[in-house]
Every structure is written in structure tokens, then in C-alpha cells.
Image: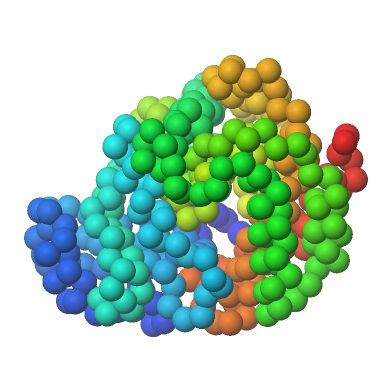
Length: 355
């Protein structure tokens, strides 16, 4: 799948995800400062979980994120949490879109939603940054590195997010959560390597450091907007999986790009990084450690296995939504094909892990 073509731009709204646009315009007039219609609505091509729409007016562009209609798993699709974390981080000058208002009244468009600014710039869908000049790629990687280090520098209580999750025990809870979610989603079926990983992860849990910070949960190049001309992150998007947790686990999830082949999501495995002008995995980890005052990440191997498993569990959820008929992305079926190869990759990493 050509991820850039498949995810760039908007499309007509699918019948299942349509809503009363006049009712939305009325709500925006009452809740979004400066809003002036007429309003035109289209649906972004990307977005596997929470449907995302572009809202155009003669003077401004906005983005709407909503819960999908229909049956959903408990605790999933928490747009209310996305709104809360983005509002708090925006007040600290962290690069997120400005949020305008949250609507929990399902009578407006059928589900809860929030509205934020449309941030100008470009989204890079492939980890090798193919459309960026070789001489500028390292600077773009450094911008990603600096941004996640900045996120992990905030003391949650100091920015109004002390209650955004539980302190301590993050990895253990996450292993339990995603194992339970995988096992509970019977619509998607079982995968032998996933069953092995559920057992392996539970038996090899690392010691808990108790370092609780705001974690994004899905930090990768295609979940951010870069400046159109400079190696700068203008906005970090898609905060659905954010919580308080282990910053090292969050960073290792980001580093999966080094282990992932380009055929599964977007990855750098097997590529000549020096020729591409991209820092090595070791250099990238060292830069993060310098920025955050760490000597290293001792549990790196375990956290890599866990994050590969977690991503596979997310794909398993997409497969389940396909079976239930409420997958929000037009190419969800293509993404679901990555489940078994990704689970196999995670299990191979577990067998190689030095624990």
C-alpha cells in the first residue's frame, strides 16, 4: 500500500460516518470563537480509530475528531482525553493544534467530538522521509527526538495532568490491558504468536522505575505535522492512546521505526541509513538519553517486544472493527493484513531478547 497516497488529503464522507452538518454549524456558532459559516465538511483519508474530518469556512479551517458510531470496546476512542491532554500541553507551548471546544452531547452529531485548528504544514508518511533532501533528514529526525524529549520533561501535576493516569506500574498495567483487549476481541480471532507473547511478556516484566510522565502512546512521523520549509515539528497529533506512564516505553515505541520493514507500516529496517542521511538507532537513542539525562535504557529489548506486541494488538482491534462493521478508515482491511507478520516479528524479537 502506498501510504502517502492512501492517507493524504480528504474524501467524501462515508455513509456510515455522515451527520447533520447544519446541526454542527449551529454548535460551532455557539462554542467556537470567531466561527463564521458557511461550513463545508469532508473526511480525512487517514485515521484508523477515531474518524477525523476537515471543516472549511471562508476564513478558517478546523479539524473535528469524533468517537466512531456503533459498538465500541470499553475505554476506547476517548476523544475527551485527547481534548484534555492537548489543551494542557498547548498551554505549556508544546506543539499541538489549538483546541476550541469539546462536545459530549451525542445529540449534535451522534457521538462525542472536539474541534481544533487545522495546522498548516506537511505530514511525512514514510520513516525514510523520501521527499526530504538527504542533507536535511538528520535535522528532521533531531526535531522528532527533541519534541518527544520535551514531552517527557513535563511534571504531570505541574501542568494540570496529575490525574491523567495512574502513577507507577505502567508497563505491567499496559501488558495486562493489551493482553486482555486482545483476548477479549473474539471477533478478530486468535493468533498463535500473540498467544505466546501474552505469556512471555507476563513472565519477563522489568522492574518498575516509577518515573511517570505524559506519554503519547503512538509517537511516529505520520502523527505529526512538520513545517513545510524547515525541520520543525509544528504539531503532534492523535493523542487517543496518551496517558501517564513510562517515558522510556513511549520512546522505544517511537524507535520501532528502526526495526520495522517498510512493508509493515513504515520502517527503516534493511535500509542504508548512512546513505539516506538518517542517524542510526544507537545514535538516536543516545540523543534522547542526552536530552533527558539518562545513562541508557536498560529494559530496551523488553520494551521493544512489548511495543511490537501492543501495535499488533491495535491492529487486532482494527480487524475486530472490520468484523463488526465500524472501521473508520477506507483502507482498514489492508492494514489488518499486517497483524500476523507483526506478531511474528514481535515473537522473533522476544526470542532474541537479552534478558
